[in-house]
Image: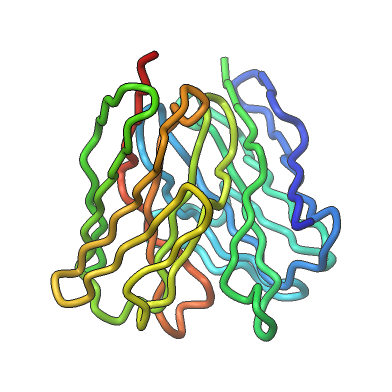
Length: 119
Length: 112
């Protein structure tokens, strides 16, 4: 149980275009989803926290107009990188939690990641 | 602010035990986690420990927590080549909505 998927796994786009990445919890309802960015050989940097039905909370330094997050349902959150540039090339990983209550409250499950390359 | 530190590399021989260490600065941590990341993949939750515990064992994995020294370790018994990966420790704080702070990751290399 507790499987999180991401789509696409890899995407190449031209500079100036937008790309959408989907994060789905397949067998549980995720009240909270997180979006991370990871550069090669580095740790994960939290970009934003997304709660179903409300606006995402962005970390300091993350441009909310550039990285649009929508958490439309308890099983789906999307990250749209708008007007992408080569410096946005990175590995984007989402995670999901069950939310408050229950023994799994503090377990955060990660998707397999999406490799974005902007040319 | 919050900070989590790990050594970057560890190399062991197959069959030996591996010990990966982590230190953190925030004493209000509620849960501490160990994640495993294989190349090009997401993170796999290995185990976690509540901050009022000293030790947790799960098959080949043993987590030790020294809250006084803010030191966390992960011991992998009988390390196998399939254990080669990057291991991240992470902490979550009370009332932070599940936000995790990650260490830099320790690359474990297991030699046959």
